[in-house]
Length: 211
Image (tube, rainbow, N blue to C red):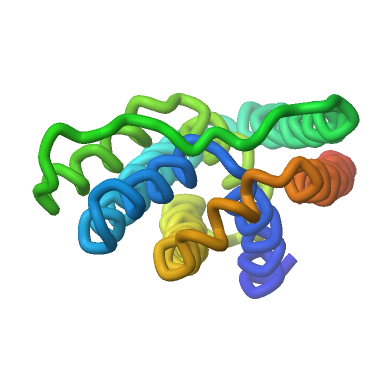
């Protein structure tokens, strides 16, 4: 696997997970509706800053583990692949169950300061351990042989940031349509099924690959 292939593969996984309606999307959508675009962009920037912190932390951990033991690093990659398969199966099962409209309401900030929006987005992500688990599970899977895990991890986190900001920009600039679109049960099921299938396939492939 080359660096280009690793970046492309990670971009596919991260991109699909980014568009699944969740707390980050809900926060940006709610911020746009209740506080305006400037506040929403600040919140989006905070969310991406939190992702970058988690990504760098996971990359540092993976790099330290590789330096200590290649066997332990391989165990981590297998655990990460298993996590991706589990998450994919979970999404596929969720897509088969009926659900209500996607939640749009979230924290309603007491003031409309742009800095407050950034802090809200930042802490929303920093206090969400699922982000750390995602990076710790995926970064080792997309580190080509003879490539420094730390540098590759930072690059992948930056790619996720670009994808995230692009998605949030679409939501902010098309708030009314985005709110109605994300609330559709069909949309949620389709995104869950596509993402679940991709995660299971990626996880199985990466588990069988040798470094």
